[in-house]
Length: 251
Length: 210
Figure 1 (tube, one colour):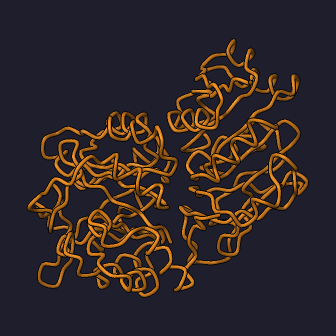
Figure 2 (cartoon, rainbow over the protein chains, first blue to last red; figure 1 turned 90 degrees about the horizontal axis):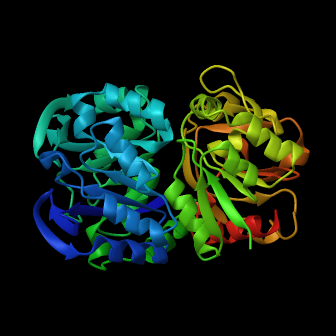
């Protein structure tokens, strides 16, 4: 499994939210990113939460700076709509890009991006919220619903050439109540792509529920580490206790 | 000290590769044309994306003969990373059948097609442990055995001759070539520039000793 530090960004600041609402500024994302690198994070996700709303992305400078002294992979998302947008993000040092809003509006974008940059560099980010009996895909950082069933969407995204799925539970995001295992199981049953679980990490036992019970490949953690509730080492030790295959960090 | 030349042919994370080379103490230049390749002392061939797209770009820029001359005739050191490594092989089955640079015998094939396991996750996006098959002394030795490196790929090299295999990793039922070598040609399937301190250490060993 991979342990991923997720940094949600607004106007160049690291922020935290609950259910993507009530944004609170925590500080300079590069300071946090460096700390997580040194503690042994396997990967970083930088997500511009308001980019697609305002048709821009403020992450270029942040990831360029991060590339100076952080030598693990970066996934970058928020407001990527075209091959050109993606190219700028890759040129700034990203290894993978994450798309949500633009891919929902134009699914063939996934195919175009995969052809140009390779599937392994394309993460389809899905924000899911349960409505009655259906898990529905949301866009614009959980603000707008789409009527699309995430189970169908994950299948379609896989077929179109996505390389990885980032699944965020809008209801659990920022709550520390644990991952939504019902949602995660639905997704991992539907695709053979690697899946990153996001939204809800709050206790060490959540690792078992995500990785062993729900069969995801990676967990993305945000405020639980931003607020020092846990550090990356605690999470790695727990994964080792569970006999999970993890990166051996201190060798 | 050697200057390291990273080839920009429109395919690869140049910023991260350049930065990691600086980090281990080498001067680095990003190069783009024939004349620069001819002057290079140490060439790095990056690469992400599809095999055919990458070979097509090299062909379009008229660089293939220059790279072959640099590598096979003048025997200068060349490091390929990820898709850059895959380009060293004879051919690739990625979306058709495409000719490679043919520095090392073998073909590049989908992990899904080689594995007998239905549930194999592809791409492998994973920190996986290196298993050292052949000790190359200063460049790579048993010290790196079982250390973790960052892999992200759907295709793998299927070597014709095991003498080119330096290290591998285990993924489902597959033994995936992780480091391959033939004289002055050295390739990593994983990303040393993205593999934390172990990656930087290995990169330094390669740049110093190849």
